[in-house]
Image (cartoon, rainbow, N blue to C red; front, side, top):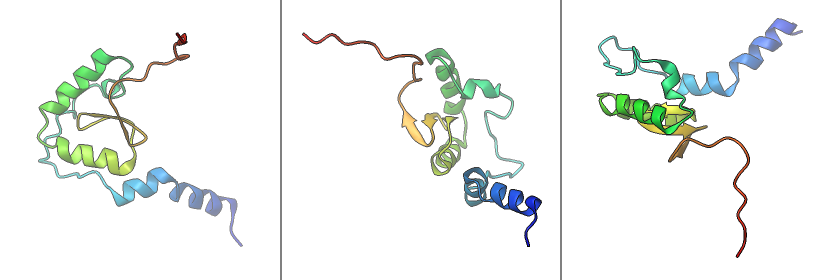
Length: 107
């Protein structure tokens, strides 16, 4: 018979985040020069175009941005990964604007 703790552990270990991170682990070699290592993490979840430009600037100077980009896409991540703005693994051209869409008047 399974206990509640075993059921809870099984649920956590089969969540998308754990499964995807296991299949696509972040390389941890100490000599990998991640440009974002000392950057403010909030800038990689931009709320405006200026912050997106700053994050993309960090990624542009990063020698491992290709690895980062591939990880973000493979994991279905959100935020800026290797210079791409992602939303659940889908590439966005710009920061989404919150709120109701504009009303378009038909001519």
